[in-house]
Length: 218
Ligand code: C5P
Image (cartoon, rainbow, N blue to C red; front, side, top):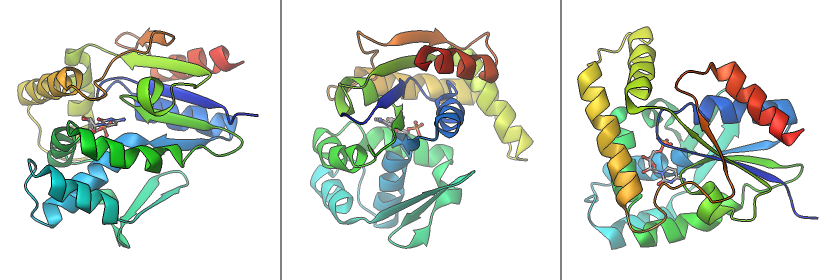
């Protein structure tokens, strides 16, 4: 029997992470935060001073890096044995991740690393191309989005709550720029799978999004 997969794709800041973690916990399934793989690679590349345009250099880094994921309540990621969790959420990491994620050979190398997360009793996979490229045979696919303004506001609130200085119009610009890069790239662009359910969370609470997805599975 195929191992069940629920894919949740969508742009940055749509609430995919929170929703996917909650659904995985409720179902007792494994969880793949595919963005954190691209983010970890970005950290490795920046650490090794490899240029973000040097595709062979980045591919080499992707092939040789060792990643360990520990997921209890919070996700802990170790890169070559070093805990990099605190660097994962930085805007600079996300922006660098989106630049290297546009490189086709880099995506090819990371494909198997992502598919290895598919284990019994099931997997919730969150990203941009989970339903279209990585797990095209997933039973249930969701495309979760929200307006760029709403996503920037949520991110702004998160940063301010953490005591980090933030600028709303700058964040909106960065989000729009990242959306553009992710949707316009040639390889595995951010796109909704034809068999996915579309959810716009702009005017929804996180809890109601979680409920809607759980109902879909039931
Ligand atoms: O989801 P997150 O913001 O952590 O992803 C960071 C970047 O990694 C995205 O902007 C995107 O360019 C890239 N990414 C991707 N494919 C995925 C997950 C993330 O290209 N499946």
